[in-house]
Every structure is written in structure tokens, then in C-alpha cells.
Length: 81
Image 1 (cartoon, rainbow, N blue to C red):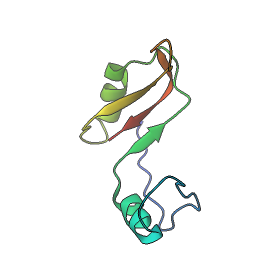
Image 2: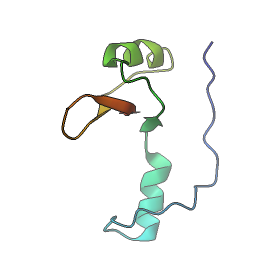
Image 3: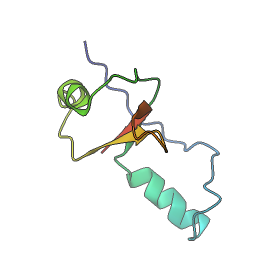
Image 4: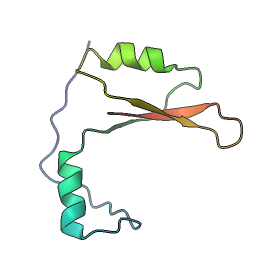
């Protein structure tokens, strides 16, 4: 069963300290982003499994798997766009 959650009207208080633009520019980008963070994944989860699951909710532009810096193996999170 798929549950779609509407985005909240208010943004979180998180601020990217490395963002070079103004606060207003950052807030505009946050309001229009289509990137979803997915955490707590099994290290054995594949891009194909994620695509199969999330494509039921809409078109998937790309999947970015978090990889271990040295081993280059999945480390339990991804970003979906």
C-alpha cells in the first residue's frame, strides 16, 4: 500500500551552512525541490528495487545511492528525484 504525504507549508529550521546564495534563494530552492531522501535502507537494497517501489508514486528521474567512501558499497540511504 502506498501512502502519499503532502508537503508541509512550513520549511524546517535547517539551514545549509555551505549554501552560497541568500536565505531567500535557499528557501525558494527548498520549496521547489523534487528530491526525496530515503534512509534506513538495507545495505543489500538495489536501485532496481527502489525504482520498482517508487515508480508507483510517479516518474523517477534518477536514483543516487549513498556509497561507502572506501569500499564503494551501499551504506543504507539514497536520494530519489
